[in-house]
Image 1: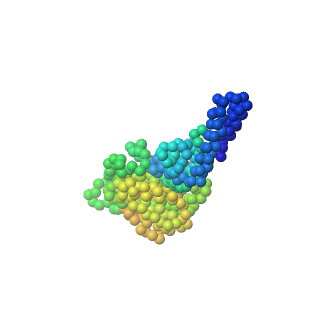
Image 2: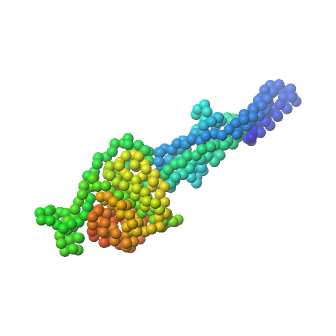
Image 3: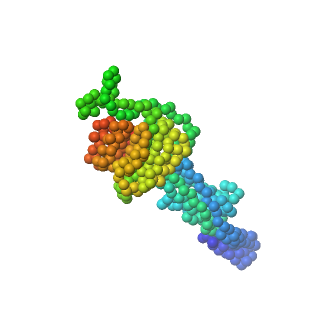
Length: 384
């Protein structure tokens, strides 16, 4: 259809032709004909391609954006496209306008910075394409096919010496890995034997039992760690509990990042309605698989965590155990207290309730980190 400029051009052409015919000003005839013919010719050309669809192609940088951070999007339309136009795109719940220019013989392209999105999977699709000619005489809506899904990862905290690496750029296999960090984790507590050093004495356990007890340590670099994420249905409700779920997944992403960077043999267990275990071996594919799973995780399990772990003891298998949960039920504390007697147990409790009592677990050597729901990402550094 003709734009306002196109109608003005036609009107101007008619006026110029009338002046040329009425006053014998032949010099105005070429201008009048140009103003009359150009909009009509361009209108015919635009209608010719009006019903030919275009194919949408999208690429994002980084390959996996992180929640709360904008990212670059490159858009291309393949097919018999006009020389320029404007695309209205929907990115999740947002709508953006992208100017398009011809970059190749068949196709136009453009780019924009997408708004920050929360964790999840979002579609980028074309809502409308307004194309026209270089003079602005005509405009022609075009059909655009295709869409692109972008996976937005949860945020995580980096160790201080690693801050500065790009998160979801997919180049983990290309960057030099940090040197493996050696250390020792608590394996259990037993009675002191003659000749052993007193530096490993656990004085709290000794005072409680009345016998001298020592901590039995194990080389942390050889331990297979199991990271369990408690996705109970209560964490996924609207409002504050959704914020609790997001904080749980940020803590899980931090633990996964730490295990992958240290090349530690580990497993990520997502306890939702159906349990899922993913192996972490320090490679880029395992990192992507784990983070993609956290990006789409939902809290939809009805059974309490203690009941799930009691029913299937294999879920907590491994040389060390990290549990990320919003629950502090007495049954869970008692279960983990018994587990801590033979396996190093680390709890990340996401809550705003200061009344949770983990003292019995701490008494047998368990580690407990209380993470407020609204805590900034920098507070997760101690989990890395």
